[in-house]
Length: 447
Image 1 (cartoon, rainbow, N blue to C red):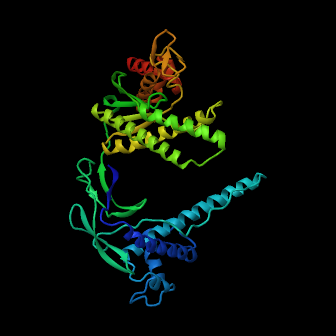
Image 2: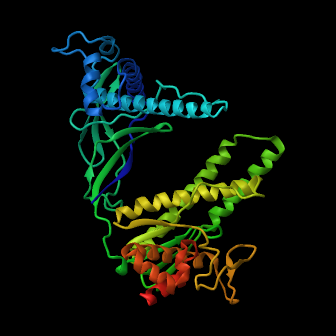
Image 3: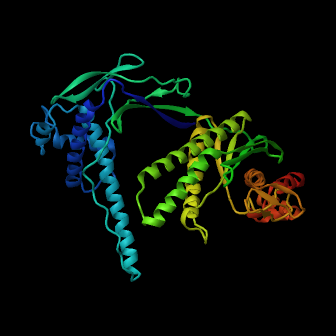
């Protein structure tokens, strides 16, 4: 069983600026508590959120059994501060201080290594930030009461007092979003621009596919340059059951036009921030990522695939000769590929499908039929095999990606002795980066 979560955003329609004071007070209290935890607690590694909350409350909160806390000014600065807000702020502050100390230890270790090698160390140490813009969680009963599907009451700071306020928010279709039978958690008040939203997170559990390797169907995905993605459905025998090309030519044309304009501006004026350019570029990138991800998952689900297979994308290395707009487009493609993989992984898990990654080396360079290395045309979309056959380069690569997944699964399921015997019959199995769809078919025949 795997835990999954999804967050739905509901726009608050009848109020906006009235919540500013609530966020301001909450973040002021958070800064106060961060400072206290940093001063009072030397060792946080062995502590948990559950254990630190009562300890900090004893230092700041006045009660009948604790009439004289060390930091009595907390009650005067934050009069009637709700208990659930206080405990939530303590938990958040604990995480921030613990993270800061972890980063500081890493910095000290890195400094010691560099100095021991006789080199100069110029990296500045991390600093504990007291000012934050966090959003509070409204716990049911104490801070939040839902009155209907689109109305609720929340406790906010208004006119120097904590009062209950009626709010109206837009409704989300839980059936369409696939969370109608999931557990709904406490909402969080989030500010986006000048508007406020209630973010409800939903939790559930899903059982990922446990189909045996020989009965599995894999959706192999090649994230290309000319096409956003090329998918093929392959079974364990090496049979290609379906294929699909996915692309967004309109968005990509707009994207490349923007990068060329940005290059021209920077060539004339030097480096410029160009926030409007980047806002539009990021919007186009997001559209391409979301559309491609939805199409991949939809295609895999239609053909009842058990796993979606990608290439493993290592750290980005810009090839030689790439500069200006060409270099920028290369970086955008890399970020887009990583974004698609992350989005598909999240969506596939909702449907019980697994995600796998294989070695990317030579998936496009080798012909799927085992005839050897291919030659690509200038546009890089077609591949000419040594036999003279012309085939789509990304489609051939997707066949090899799916084949490598099954070859690896078969290798893990048999003994080393038997695998060596199979390598003698199918020599290309000795090196993983040389395997193709033809290798998978030959492996099945040799078994």
